[in-house]
Structures are given as C-alpha cells and as structure tokens.
Image (cartoon, rainbow, N blue to C red; front, side, top):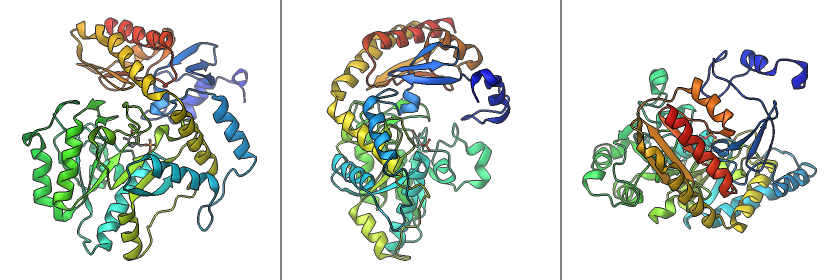
Amino acid sequence: MSIEDADWPALDRRHVWHPYSAIDSPLPTYPVVSAQGVRLRLADGRELIDGMSSWWCAIHGYNHPEMNRALKEQIDTLAHVMFGGLTHEPAVALATRLVELTPDSLETVFFADSGSVAVEVALKMAIQYWQAKGQPGKQRFVTVRNGYHGDTFGAMSVCDPVNGMHASFSGALVQQYFAETPSCSFGAPCNAKEMNSLRTLLVEHHSHIAALILEPVVQGAGGMRFYSADYVKKARELCDEYGVLLILDEIATGFGRTGRLFACEHAGIAPDILCLGKALTGGYLSLAATLSSANIAHTIGQGKPGLFMHGPTFMANPMACTAGLTSLRLLLESPWQERVTDIAQRLESGLAPCRAYDHVADVRVLGAIGVVELNRPVDMITVQPRFVDAGVWIRPFGKLVYLMPPFIINERDLETLTSAVIDVVSEM
Ligand SMILES: *Cc1c(COP(=O)(O)O)cnc(C)c1O
C-alpha cells in the first residue's frame, strides 16, 4: 500500500491504536515517510526537526550510516534465534560492554524487549532474591510519588498513584508504598527531614519490602522533575540500613542524557539492580536490559526453584543487540559530554524567555533535557498543529512542553526548536 492508494490517515484512525490515545481521536496523527539526521519527513513533503529523539531514544539521529551498515551485516548473518539453550556473539558482546560501563558491582545482564518488561524483570528478581534468602514475605515495593516505570501491571503498580494509571486499574494492582516526591532540588543536599517520608515507610514496612525503585535524578513521564543526587545517595544508605534492595530505573536517564553516562554517577552510588532501555539501541530497535549484582544472580540460582522465572520469546534478539553495540560505540567515540553540556547551555538560554509568561510555572534544564511547565494542561488540538507548522516535532504532555533532542543536533536546529517553544507558549 502506498499513500496514493488510499486515505492513509483515515485508515490509521479507523484501525490503528497509538500510545495513550483513542481510536477516532480528534487529535491529528502525522504520517512519516522517512527520517534523516534530526529531520522527520512527512508524507506531504514537510520536514520537522525532531525535539523528542523519539521518546529519549534516537540519540544519534535517524538513518545513521554506521548503524545501517552494522544492521545490514547482521541481518545477512543471523536475524533471530531463540535464546533458550543457545547464545550468540552480539548478546555476549553487548552484555560484557554494559557490565564494563555500569557501576562495578553489576555483573549480570538479562535482556528483554521493552523497558516495562525490564522493570518487571527487576521486580521479579528482587522477590526471588529474598525468597532464596528465606524471606518470602518481602514481596512489596516502595517508591516515590511522580515516578513512571512503564505500562505493564507490575510497573504500573510503582507509577505515581495519582497521575499514573492507578485510577483505572486500582482493583487489579498490587498496593505498593509511596514516599513523598523528593523535594530537594538537583545540585542541593538533602536533609534528614527531606528523607523522612521514605525512612518512615522503611522503618515500618521493611519486612514486607523487597526493593526501593527510583528513577535517579530525573523523573521522566511522571512529571519531568529533577531532584537531588544526594537523595539517591541517602536512599542507598537507607536501603542498606533496612535490608531492602535498590533498583534504579535508568531507562530514560541512561546513555548520557543527564550529562553523565548513567544518572547514578551524579550520586556516586551503585544500585543492586539497574534497568536500561530507550537509548540503548540508539532508537533503532526495541531492547532493554536488567543488570544485577553477582550476589543477587547467584543467590537466586542457589534458592528455590533455582531458576530465574522469566524468558521473553525475543530475548536478546541479535539485530537489537547489534544495534545496541553499535550505538554504544558511536556514543563513546563521540564528544557526547561536550555536546550534552552545549545543548544544556543552549536550552537554558533558548527557553529562558518563557519565564516571563504568567501561565509558565517553571523552566528547567538538566543535561539535554529542557522543560517548560505551564500552570494548566496544554490544549493539544491547537498546539500540536502549531508546532508542525513551525517545522518542529515537539509533543507536549499534560502541563509540560519539553525538549530532549538528539545529541547530534546543531546550533541552528536547536535554536529553531527553542524559538518554536517560545512562540507557541507565548500564544497560549
Ligand atoms: C519509558 C520508560 C519505561 C518503559 O519503557 P517501555 O519501553 O516504554 O516499556 C520505564 N521506565 C522509565 C523511566 C521510562 O522512561
């Protein structure tokens, strides 16, 4: 089928679900036919500068020659094979690389096909670890408000209970423990009072709690909030004090977005379990990974049933692993730190004029993430076409208009993005 054959968008409206959307939604959905560098090309020939990196993923931009070459070679060698009882070089090489790059204590890698599943795997690992240690009562989780960890049931249960999906599914979700959202800002220390909510929950419920799960430093889809690395450090100490594992969800923050390769580096701590996804394959294919310490892996192996009970059909898909290896090589060979620092400075100066508007509650930047928070929800029906008319792809949610461009974006294109945000926000 080509665009000429039929009314593409009408068929899309009738048959195809989109994320957080309704069939027959009045919101426009734009057909993309190709992409190159930081530009998406629409079916009508218009080009949009991508301010979203396809939801944190496309850090090297689109249609990258080296990514394409590596994947073409891999498809002619081994596109897929089951991972039960079999292994292959792309998986072993990527796992080894991830173990090298992440904190020292992380030794083992479980590959899954999406971030949500990587979170499910992390939660299950934590429960199986305590079971193997003879503490089967530790099956619940503690987290902080405003978090987002994915859309599957276990992951949903640790998303923010108000702005997450709890309202629709409360009867079907396990009740977890929610500490207040961290109130200490990025760069500032966290005092005992600011840790109190988390400490209290751990004091009272640690015998039922398997792990604390946190997005370190940046809370993504739960509100694009930045908070103190000192909170993460002190949370690590509390976990050790109360015999609770620490799971860090770096699915959004991993691979340089916050200015460090992994956001836990801001806090100088290591989790017991680490979830990675999104930018792992540079936006080419769906892949996620759950890393754990050797202690957790070996304890699970020595307990009952002696196996870790999870195994996705497409586990460690060789194409996806090759994309991950190539993306990591491109990232580490590039001056990504300077690029992210430069993007941060330009986002800061480019978005600063938004602070002048009464309907803007906050403007904040951390690494290659720029956020304009309004004091009311964005009217997507008018705003989305305005951004497209301005030649940019920016997808607000709730009260948030935000940018997280590919790291390869140049000064001019970034300026076009920030100017479009100012223009559209000023008209709201
Ligand atoms: C996107 C995201 C997830 C879920 O990943 P999917 O690949 O969409 O399932 C989980 N945690 C965080 C922090 C995320 O940003």
